[in-house]
Image (cartoon, rainbow, N blue to C red; front, side):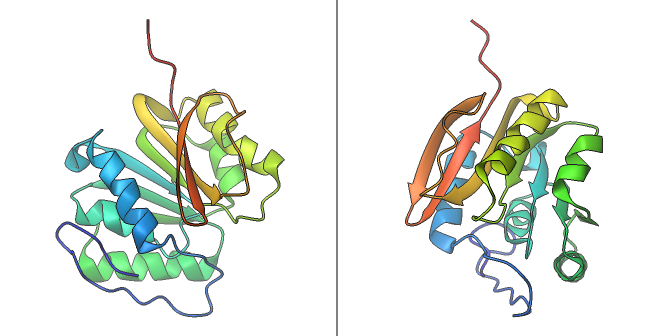
Length: 182
């Protein structure tokens, strides 16, 4: 994987092959950050990266100047890799080993951007829990975005607070946000 933009632009990060991950493709990641660039100044936001895997998305935010990044993953190897990489590049990423759903049940605070990249074979009921927990627990700032990455064969359009989606190859990003005040 490579970092697309910012302080570490062009830097390649090689994750151990044994990690149980499916990193977001560079094309999809670049497109996602082009969208986010129209919404936020990266040095003014806070990010929660769920099912963070290799930390690919967290590194991109850190490279662009985000100072408050929390990465959650249930795999010890993934969390260890994120911690090592963040330390190596002096990135402000707090990597936590936890089951994402249990973490969301007990989470406090708010984030500007919450990114979730669960396994593509997750049952739709489990996908639905992600936005449900986040909005019920008020974890997303009022001007924030929840982005859930999933297969193009999965549809999340029916879930409350769904806003829009963008597809890139086999990847789809579904965006959720608080309703706008009239």
